[in-house]
Length: 165
Image (cartoon, rainbow, N blue to C red; front, side):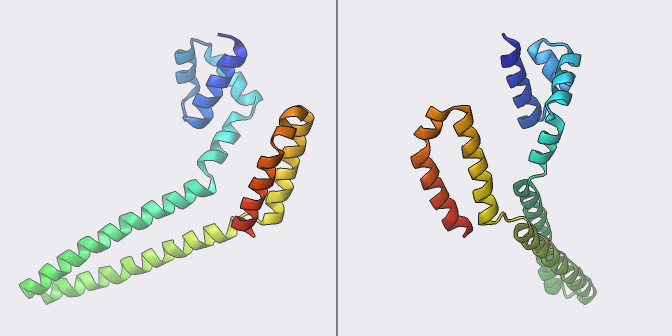
């Protein structure tokens, strides 16, 4: 296998799959030093961190937290109903206090989620500027390919204008 192919596979394993340099070296039968040099030279750590901390990832993590807290709240409600049936006013009161704390926590996480989505939403003008740069770079790299993508570019920009505009 050629070095370019190995480096490409190593990139995918490191950046996308989250494998360690040692795991990659063993799998691809390379020196760990070689993989380490690629990681440093090509900025793979920064790319992996950016992917792992993307808006979608952070948003998904908050949604998981909200889901877990909601499950706790539902369990608490079951316990509260049982306390009512048993006539245990003290336990019922304690569970009511816990329910208020959980409701407040859910509210705060929901607010964080809304704020995250609002603060990190890309504007249409920024998106168009980036895509212009990408398409211009594609034209310099491979003009024939650039010309083949003109219809796609137009459709994509229209779609994103509707989505972000």
